Length: 255
Image 1 (cartoon, rainbow, N blue to C red):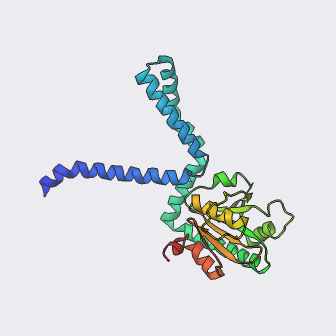
Image 2 (image 1 turned 90 degrees about the vertical axis):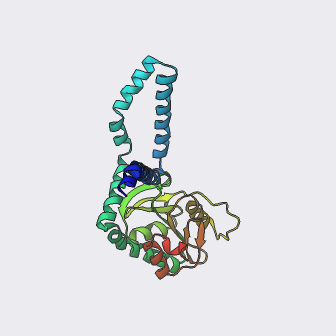
Image 3 (image 1 turned 180 degrees about the vertical axis):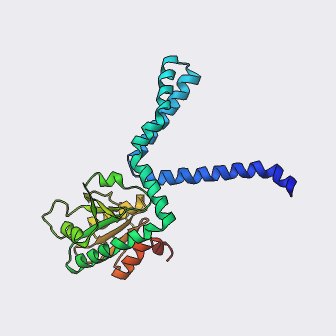
Protein backbone atom coordinates (compact mmCIF):
# COMPACT_ATOMS: atom_id res chain seq x y z
CA UNK A 1 0.00 0.00 0.00
CA UNK A 2 2.84 2.34 0.92
CA UNK A 3 4.57 1.60 -2.36
CA UNK A 4 1.40 2.34 -4.32
CA UNK A 5 1.01 5.70 -2.56
CA UNK A 6 4.66 6.48 -3.22
CA UNK A 7 4.21 5.77 -6.93
CA UNK A 8 0.80 7.32 -7.51
CA UNK A 9 0.97 10.02 -4.83
CA UNK A 10 2.39 12.73 -7.14
CA UNK A 11 -0.23 11.92 -9.81
CA UNK A 12 -3.07 12.21 -7.26
CA UNK A 13 -1.72 15.57 -6.08
CA UNK A 14 -1.46 16.82 -9.68
CA UNK A 15 -5.02 15.72 -10.47
CA UNK A 16 -6.28 17.42 -7.31
CA UNK A 17 -4.35 20.56 -8.25
CA UNK A 18 -5.95 20.62 -11.71
CA UNK A 19 -9.44 20.06 -10.28
CA UNK A 20 -9.07 22.91 -7.79
CA UNK A 21 -7.83 25.29 -10.50
CA UNK A 22 -10.69 24.19 -12.78
CA UNK A 23 -13.27 24.99 -10.11
CA UNK A 24 -11.67 28.38 -9.40
CA UNK A 25 -11.55 29.39 -13.07
CA UNK A 26 -15.10 28.12 -13.60
CA UNK A 27 -16.40 30.25 -10.72
CA UNK A 28 -14.52 33.27 -12.02
CA UNK A 29 -15.98 32.83 -15.50
CA UNK A 30 -19.49 32.64 -14.03
CA UNK A 31 -18.90 35.87 -12.11
CA UNK A 32 -17.59 37.88 -15.08
CA UNK A 33 -19.83 36.34 -17.75
CA UNK A 34 -22.41 38.86 -18.85
CA UNK A 35 -20.23 41.79 -17.76
CA UNK A 36 -17.73 44.02 -19.53
CA UNK A 37 -14.99 42.30 -17.58
CA UNK A 38 -15.08 39.49 -20.14
CA UNK A 39 -13.91 42.00 -22.75
CA UNK A 40 -11.01 42.94 -20.47
CA UNK A 41 -10.08 39.26 -20.16
CA UNK A 42 -9.97 38.97 -23.94
CA UNK A 43 -7.70 42.03 -24.04
CA UNK A 44 -5.41 40.52 -21.40
CA UNK A 45 -5.13 37.28 -23.36
CA UNK A 46 -4.27 39.30 -26.47
CA UNK A 47 -1.50 41.17 -24.63
CA UNK A 48 -0.22 37.88 -23.20
CA UNK A 49 -0.05 36.37 -26.70
CA UNK A 50 1.67 39.51 -28.00
CA UNK A 51 4.25 39.24 -25.21
CA UNK A 52 5.10 35.64 -26.10
CA UNK A 53 5.36 36.40 -29.83
CA UNK A 54 7.42 39.57 -29.34
CA UNK A 55 9.90 37.93 -26.96
CA UNK A 56 10.21 34.36 -28.23
CA UNK A 57 9.31 34.54 -31.93
CA UNK A 58 10.11 37.99 -33.34
CA UNK A 59 12.69 38.93 -30.68
CA UNK A 60 11.56 42.56 -30.56
CA UNK A 61 13.65 43.87 -27.67
CA UNK A 62 12.02 47.26 -27.15
CA UNK A 63 8.45 45.90 -27.28
CA UNK A 64 9.40 42.94 -25.10
CA UNK A 65 10.92 45.27 -22.48
CA UNK A 66 7.79 47.44 -22.47
CA UNK A 67 5.45 44.46 -22.14
CA UNK A 68 7.55 42.96 -19.34
CA UNK A 69 7.22 46.24 -17.40
CA UNK A 70 3.48 46.05 -17.95
CA UNK A 71 3.27 42.58 -16.44
CA UNK A 72 5.23 43.74 -13.37
CA UNK A 73 2.40 46.17 -12.60
CA UNK A 74 -0.33 43.81 -13.82
CA UNK A 75 -1.42 42.69 -10.34
CA UNK A 76 -2.29 46.26 -9.33
CA UNK A 77 -3.93 46.98 -12.69
CA UNK A 78 -6.09 43.85 -12.49
CA UNK A 79 -7.08 44.63 -8.89
CA UNK A 80 -8.34 48.05 -10.01
CA UNK A 81 -10.12 46.78 -13.14
CA UNK A 82 -11.77 43.80 -11.43
CA UNK A 83 -12.42 45.35 -8.04
CA UNK A 84 -16.19 44.85 -8.33
CA UNK A 85 -15.88 41.25 -9.51
CA UNK A 86 -13.32 40.42 -6.81
CA UNK A 87 -15.57 41.93 -4.15
CA UNK A 88 -18.52 39.89 -5.45
CA UNK A 89 -16.51 36.65 -5.31
CA UNK A 90 -15.50 37.21 -1.68
CA UNK A 91 -19.05 38.27 -0.79
CA UNK A 92 -20.44 35.04 -2.28
CA UNK A 93 -17.85 32.91 -0.47
CA UNK A 94 -18.43 34.71 2.81
CA UNK A 95 -22.18 34.44 2.43
CA UNK A 96 -21.95 30.68 1.96
CA UNK A 97 -19.55 30.23 4.90
CA UNK A 98 -21.74 32.18 7.30
CA UNK A 99 -25.06 31.26 5.69
CA UNK A 100 -25.86 34.96 5.44
CA UNK A 101 -27.15 34.69 1.88
CA UNK A 102 -30.36 32.92 2.83
CA UNK A 103 -31.02 35.44 5.62
CA UNK A 104 -30.52 38.34 3.25
CA UNK A 105 -32.73 36.67 0.67
CA UNK A 106 -35.60 36.15 3.12
CA UNK A 107 -35.67 39.87 3.84
CA UNK A 108 -36.62 40.84 0.29
CA UNK A 109 -38.37 37.81 -1.23
CA UNK A 110 -41.61 38.82 0.49
CA UNK A 111 -41.39 42.29 -1.09
CA UNK A 112 -40.99 40.82 -4.57
CA UNK A 113 -43.85 38.34 -4.07
CA UNK A 114 -46.18 41.01 -2.67
CA UNK A 115 -45.29 43.33 -5.54
CA UNK A 116 -46.15 40.62 -8.08
CA UNK A 117 -49.45 39.94 -6.27
CA UNK A 118 -50.36 43.64 -6.26
CA UNK A 119 -49.50 44.07 -9.94
CA UNK A 120 -51.47 40.95 -10.80
CA UNK A 121 -54.56 42.13 -8.90
CA UNK A 122 -54.46 45.58 -10.52
CA UNK A 123 -53.69 44.22 -14.02
CA UNK A 124 -50.41 46.11 -14.25
CA UNK A 125 -47.37 44.76 -16.07
CA UNK A 126 -44.07 44.08 -14.34
CA UNK A 127 -40.68 42.57 -15.11
CA UNK A 128 -38.15 41.72 -12.38
CA UNK A 129 -34.89 39.84 -13.03
CA UNK A 130 -33.10 38.32 -10.03
CA UNK A 131 -29.41 37.73 -10.71
CA UNK A 132 -27.88 34.39 -9.74
CA UNK A 133 -24.36 33.29 -10.67
CA UNK A 134 -24.06 34.82 -14.14
CA UNK A 135 -23.59 38.59 -14.11
CA UNK A 136 -26.20 40.92 -15.59
CA UNK A 137 -24.12 44.10 -15.74
CA UNK A 138 -24.44 44.37 -19.50
CA UNK A 139 -28.18 44.74 -18.96
CA UNK A 140 -28.07 46.98 -15.89
CA UNK A 141 -26.03 49.43 -17.95
CA UNK A 142 -28.96 49.84 -20.35
CA UNK A 143 -31.15 51.19 -17.53
CA UNK A 144 -30.92 53.69 -14.69
CA UNK A 145 -28.61 52.71 -11.84
CA UNK A 146 -30.37 52.80 -8.44
CA UNK A 147 -28.51 50.52 -5.97
CA UNK A 148 -31.50 50.95 -3.64
CA UNK A 149 -32.91 48.79 -0.88
CA UNK A 150 -35.67 46.49 -2.09
CA UNK A 151 -39.16 47.43 -0.98
CA UNK A 152 -42.65 46.80 -2.25
CA UNK A 153 -43.27 50.55 -2.36
CA UNK A 154 -40.26 51.19 -4.58
CA UNK A 155 -41.12 48.40 -7.01
CA UNK A 156 -44.76 49.46 -7.27
CA UNK A 157 -43.78 53.08 -7.85
CA UNK A 158 -41.77 51.92 -10.86
CA UNK A 159 -44.36 49.64 -12.44
CA UNK A 160 -47.73 51.16 -11.49
CA UNK A 161 -46.99 54.60 -12.90
CA UNK A 162 -47.44 54.18 -16.65
CA UNK A 163 -46.16 57.69 -17.34
CA UNK A 164 -42.88 56.99 -15.52
CA UNK A 165 -39.87 56.57 -17.85
CA UNK A 166 -38.84 53.35 -16.05
CA UNK A 167 -42.25 51.67 -16.30
CA UNK A 168 -41.65 49.63 -19.46
CA UNK A 169 -38.18 48.32 -18.65
CA UNK A 170 -37.00 45.58 -16.31
CA UNK A 171 -35.87 45.90 -12.71
CA UNK A 172 -32.70 43.95 -11.96
CA UNK A 173 -32.11 42.63 -8.45
CA UNK A 174 -28.53 41.95 -7.38
CA UNK A 175 -27.09 41.16 -3.96
CA UNK A 176 -30.25 42.19 -2.11
CA UNK A 177 -30.52 45.55 -3.89
CA UNK A 178 -32.49 47.06 -6.74
CA UNK A 179 -29.43 47.39 -8.95
CA UNK A 180 -31.13 49.20 -11.84
CA UNK A 181 -34.53 49.90 -13.41
CA UNK A 182 -35.74 50.56 -16.93
CA UNK A 183 -33.33 47.94 -18.27
CA UNK A 184 -33.54 46.43 -21.74
CA UNK A 185 -33.43 42.64 -21.97
CA UNK A 186 -32.71 40.47 -25.04
CA UNK A 187 -35.83 39.23 -26.79
CA UNK A 188 -36.34 35.51 -27.34
CA UNK A 189 -36.85 34.22 -30.86
CA UNK A 190 -38.06 30.80 -29.72
CA UNK A 191 -41.09 29.98 -31.87
CA UNK A 192 -41.88 26.81 -29.92
CA UNK A 193 -43.01 28.70 -26.82
CA UNK A 194 -46.35 30.50 -26.55
CA UNK A 195 -45.36 34.02 -25.51
CA UNK A 196 -47.98 36.56 -24.47
CA UNK A 197 -46.15 39.84 -25.11
CA UNK A 198 -42.90 41.76 -25.19
CA UNK A 199 -42.31 41.42 -21.44
CA UNK A 200 -42.62 37.64 -21.63
CA UNK A 201 -40.39 37.51 -24.70
CA UNK A 202 -37.77 39.61 -22.91
CA UNK A 203 -38.02 37.45 -19.78
CA UNK A 204 -37.56 34.27 -21.80
CA UNK A 205 -34.73 35.84 -23.81
CA UNK A 206 -32.74 36.68 -20.68
CA UNK A 207 -33.35 33.20 -19.24
CA UNK A 208 -31.85 31.68 -22.40
CA UNK A 209 -28.48 33.39 -21.91
CA UNK A 210 -28.22 33.62 -18.09
CA UNK A 211 -29.30 31.70 -14.98
CA UNK A 212 -31.38 34.60 -13.66
CA UNK A 213 -34.90 34.09 -12.32
CA UNK A 214 -37.23 36.48 -14.14
CA UNK A 215 -40.64 37.32 -12.73
CA UNK A 216 -43.09 38.72 -15.28
CA UNK A 217 -46.65 39.93 -14.67
CA UNK A 218 -48.96 40.15 -17.67
CA UNK A 219 -50.73 43.46 -18.19
CA UNK A 220 -53.44 41.73 -20.24
CA UNK A 221 -54.29 38.76 -17.99
CA UNK A 222 -52.68 39.61 -14.65
CA UNK A 223 -51.01 36.20 -14.59
CA UNK A 224 -47.64 35.76 -12.90
CA UNK A 225 -45.03 33.82 -14.86
CA UNK A 226 -41.44 32.74 -14.23
CA UNK A 227 -38.74 32.47 -16.90
CA UNK A 228 -35.80 30.26 -15.99
CA UNK A 229 -33.18 28.40 -18.02
CA UNK A 230 -34.96 28.97 -21.33
CA UNK A 231 -38.39 27.91 -20.10
CA UNK A 232 -41.47 29.98 -19.32
CA UNK A 233 -43.60 28.75 -16.41
CA UNK A 234 -46.99 30.47 -16.50
CA UNK A 235 -49.80 31.17 -14.04
CA UNK A 236 -47.83 30.84 -10.79
CA UNK A 237 -49.32 31.52 -7.37
CA UNK A 238 -47.67 33.66 -4.70
CA UNK A 239 -46.59 30.58 -2.71
CA UNK A 240 -45.07 28.97 -5.81
CA UNK A 241 -43.27 32.22 -6.68
CA UNK A 242 -41.79 32.43 -3.18
CA UNK A 243 -40.63 28.81 -3.32
CA UNK A 244 -39.01 29.30 -6.73
CA UNK A 245 -37.09 32.42 -5.68
CA UNK A 246 -35.97 30.89 -2.37
CA UNK A 247 -34.69 27.77 -4.14
CA UNK A 248 -32.94 29.91 -6.80
CA UNK A 249 -34.94 28.10 -9.46
CA UNK A 250 -33.92 24.59 -8.39
CA UNK A 251 -37.53 23.62 -7.67
CA UNK A 252 -38.31 24.18 -11.36
CA UNK A 253 -35.51 21.93 -12.60
CA UNK A 254 -36.42 19.15 -10.21
CA UNK A 255 -39.99 18.86 -11.52
